Amino acid sequence: MEEIQGAAKFGALDLMLLGVFFISYNVLALLQIAFLYGGRYVTFGAVTVGAVLLAQGFVFLDVSAFCADRSSVIICSDDKRQLVSLGMVWVIVCAAMLVIFAALQGLRRLRAAK
View (cartoon, rainbow, N blue to C red):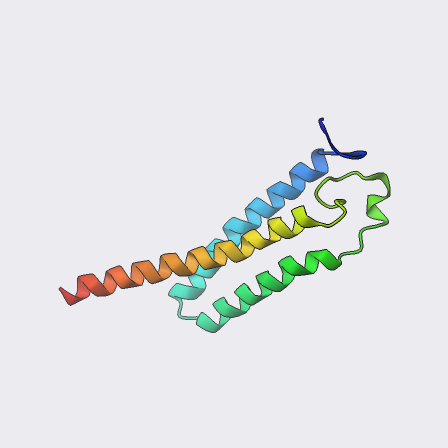
């Protein structure tokens, strides 16, 4: 593996972490669409706010014991910028689902008006 940052290397743990995040993006998108089409707008908003808080909360994780051997580039970075960035994609997914829903509802109303 390639040396990325100090003694940390991008390895199997980082690949698994990326996989978990990518799967969570898809699951979140499906849930958010279900909430919007089900009329559960408050639940949609709560999940979106939860995604924002969780993504920003990664900064406060204390992983010093886990990172003693610097086994992960993503988790063990000094400012946790990579971890927060991965979490912020949850917020982007929520915003994208809202935009898609609004566009489809607008198209539906335009077609119904004709």
